[in-house]
Amino acid sequence: MRWIITLIVLSLLLVPLAAQEAKMPESKEPMKVRFEDRKPFLVAGLEAKNFMDGKAMADIWDKFASLVDKIPGSIADCSYGVYFTENEQNAMSMQDYRYFAGVEIEEKVELPEGLLLHEVPGGYYAVFEYVGNIEGIGAAYGYIFGEWLVTSNYTPAGGEMFEVYDERFAGDSDESVVEIWVPIQKEKGNPEDLKTKEPQPQQ
Image (cartoon, rainbow, N blue to C red; front, side, top):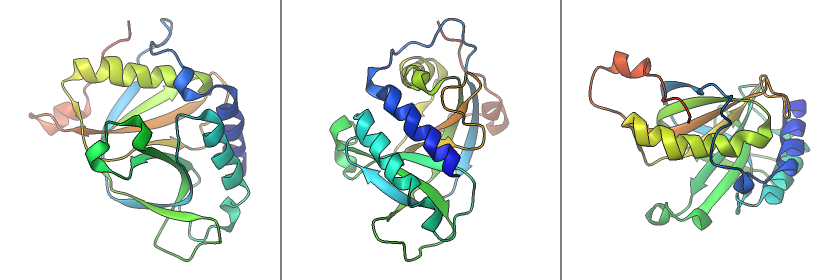
């Protein structure tokens, strides 16, 4: 677990997400996407109030790395980066968003001093697999929101977007994998058809 978090910290220090280009490299294949229902779950960790500040996010992961081994009841060998807003009425305002770095736990427990508990509400998600150097993940978001959602006939849904960093994450490696979970509205039609729908190629 600690090596994953260390890689996240080092990677976030390299390039703030807000500075990424919106277009995926032409040589990249379309990101794999699947569709999943996810029940609400709990994460224990730390919160950053300005996720557009790459240094603030890196500081959160750095601090979290020193505390993660003290969290009781963690249930998976992966970390989560959760984007959420405290004010649903202003959900479109980027200034309202928070970033939470944490691990999933089974149930509410008393946490060591300095750690917080956050409940992710769950929902129906498009799950994208970003493969490549973490420096390019901003371009992946540009593709998802600038191209894929426009051409897929899906629409964003209320809920919380999050990233999953598991054993496949390798920081600046071209083989590194990060899952990006985006809450969406289900399309009308055959659910089995929706599960196999492919994303549109990047331009």
